[in-house]
Length: 278
Length: 278
Image (tube, rainbow over all chains, first blue to last red):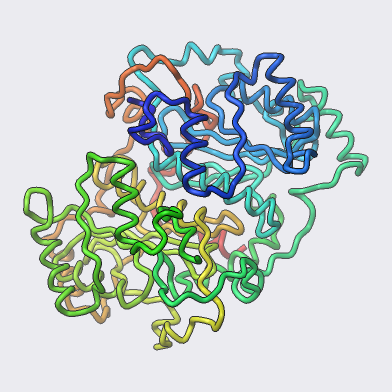
């Protein structure tokens, strides 16, 4: 039952694998999307090779995929995805929710340009503690669909920003539900990372053989981009129902945002850490 | 078609009212929840009276409801909810997404204790501009399910914190998708608010005749509360699948949060505005 309150699980899907249930639900929501499922343990060598092949030739046109999203539930699987992406120089976004379900994060990884998952492993892992020993007798990891939904929202929103090239993709974005606190900071790669492919990619970035995604300068014109251009070519409809204002409630904010945009990451980081140190 | 990408709309529901589609979808997700629908224009007098009656006697036990969540799409409807909640001293949470769909907010309203929706109307409304004139020819307000989902997640997460009494309910929480910026600050009531019931509630708070919700001191012990107590009494399950870590990726953060908790709103607010002014 503990898994029933996952986002996509519905009572009639009880017993189905998460992969099957997710595919079924998503297909119902949007039948026009092509969904391909591979339900296997990515940490096993033969599956890992298949995963590498899928990333290399798995796109709709038989080429390299645009982006990999990681939503796995253990460190080993994350490290496998990290290793594969470093090996192929594949951009990906890692995501997760903590065991107590009241905090989560997303981390954008551009191999060589930003920290890979191995550059800064969670403290507990760096200390060599076996994650299996963390499971407590009689206690299953909590699950709040709200936290899962918010972190999934951040993951997909940043995916849209990356693929459709609007706004800024966050290198790291955390979420602490109890206080609605959102730590956000850049993560530079670790020059002493244990992953040789990460170090190789770092060299490529150094030698400008790899295009920068996060740190290249960019101009964002919020109003024009979204409001006037109507990029989605949505037509006027008679009923104006929907959870929308016919106005923005944050006129001051939006202008502030534009200027935040023009400041260096460092000062933003400083403020965030000040905030954290309060 | 523009409404099809709302959170709950599925192709087979095309033509259904949002109220009917939402009820149907939610019932499928959780058949154990009792859902009662009233599909009407809340700004019309007879409906407004029915709305007041529902808030007064609409709970499962025939009494006062615990909380009202506002997810409407125009200023007039918001003001009607605001008026009703001020009249009854009813706690509620307002929510919305801007017309360009890249920003949104939630606002917790405890009549007399925090600003009501009329205490600080959106600038454009304060200037007496008719919101209908904001609709642009050939352009329907954009809708990003990601933004809708994140704001809805904030709304429900804060609802859980309020009803189940854990963590801190945010008085105001904004979300700017382009930069992943989250403005958060307290909103004191306006002593010159146009709503007489708001002023009446402000007096009650002043005379300590009304219990404080947001500004009463509270101790939060994140670790103990959530990790050790297992308040949801979730039993151990064999499969540990799910988008969860077997560890927290933010060990430093969580300790930081605890100390943020102990600081005054003012300094948090100062930092936030510094952040905004960058």
